[in-house]
Amino acid sequence: MNPLFAGLFDDAAIFPPGNTPMDVAVSAHRERQGSPLVGPFVCSLARFGDLAGAAAGGPVVKVSLVLPGPVSEIPAADGLDVVALEGPSLTAHGTLPVYTEISCREITAARVAVLRESGLRLKIRTGGVRADAFPDESELAGALWAAVRGGLAFKLTAGLHDPIRHRDPVTGFEHHGFLNVLLATARALQGYEIERALADQDGERVAAAVAAIDEVLVKAVRHHFISFGTCSIDEPVAGLRQFRLLEDPR
Image (cartoon, rainbow, N blue to C red; front, side, top):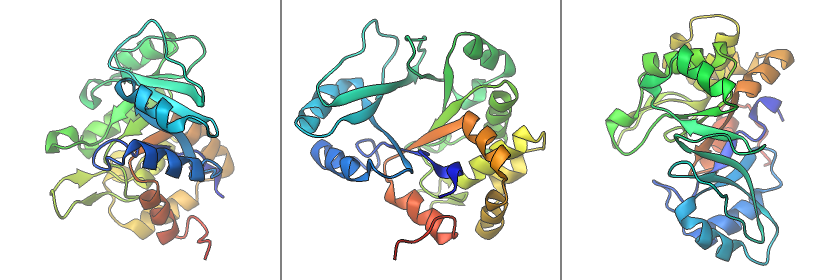
């Protein structure tokens, strides 16, 4: 498997629009835990108790915990291992990776520098239930450029089920593609203009460019672009197979 995709997909099955019941989501996650593609299970603080109940008595589940804001103590439960924190206005917490969410339009070089000096990472929202939750190519390009050039790690959340940028035929929302974001991150590291990489809707062209990223650049890309939350692991995996970037087990 191309290491560009290792641990790229954080399992956010219980969040909209998936809204998978907790027990079903935990069971499915445990079945996937051996996959090199899958990152931690994403759960809000409000549902941590539900998760603990669903996870009791089975193999340990690694959790990225979504907080409503700074907290003094991180909850613990048998069967759960909190490996990362994410949410708005967070502060550093021991050795845990902490992703603080900032509006895409407010991510600047200066704010990136403050986060880096504070030992924090960046969480970028790329979608939601309203059209204004989706940053356009220019806005996302500015955020990615600031993060990469500022030496900051980041994760993305929402709206990235598909590998390629597209318009949803039902909602009409313009979704970014996760392959476009990987390519844009690579181009930012190379010092290239990246808006074009985010806007490209030619799947074969984007996939070919991603496949051509060499081993050294792959490591640099994933040093910055850590993962993204998706309520469907199956959809992005199917997208990789569609563009022959992942072997089909059949």
